[in-house]
Image 1 (cartoon, rainbow, N blue to C red):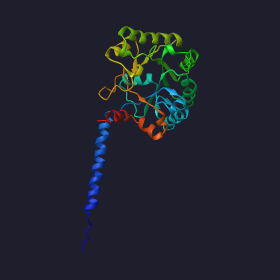
Image 2: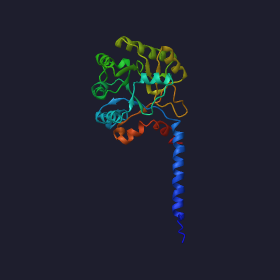
Image 3: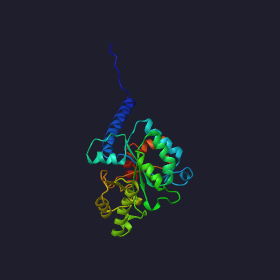
Image 4: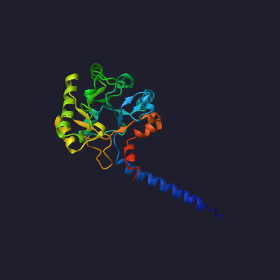
Length: 267
């Protein structure tokens, strides 16, 4: 007597749906992988009180959790200068590479962030508004020199007065870009090679001026989905807020795919 083993229509449909989902995920992964962007994290203040009311501030507790997460999960955290060298040399960059940056030069970058970065030996770049040095709430000259000499912090330029460079004349923009570099180099007795556009705003003229002055690369915020991911004079960054104290959120943001998802979520 022959025994026939059949598959019910319901099981068959589930198999077809499962195969379709797997195929779709493979296609989606291939499409998204083309848009992978090395996460360059952008911080501003590391302040417990400000983190409750500002998206530009992260509490020391959340920052500690984030840095511990990167350390424990063996992310390849590199300096922005090293990342530029890899990019320019067209070297393979591992998918777990992370770059850490700070804008403005707040004093809590020294009092709160620096000890945590030292604890986990994680390099970072801090972009300084030179006219704000020594003002209340901002780092002073001695603190900047200590950070620069630490071996894990790179001090870089964020202009003299934090003016929106696309809204001032070309001559004034050049002055902001050039003089901030010269001031920091005199203070630190070392070359200043990196630049951050105030509010992430730049155009072709401003970008060219940054190149002409002698910077090796520059960071923006997010120039938009139609802007290339590999322009070393307008690198895209991911703003980190207190919400990323949730490690699932932080994991998504450092995945390398979050920029692509964010740029296309409203399409």
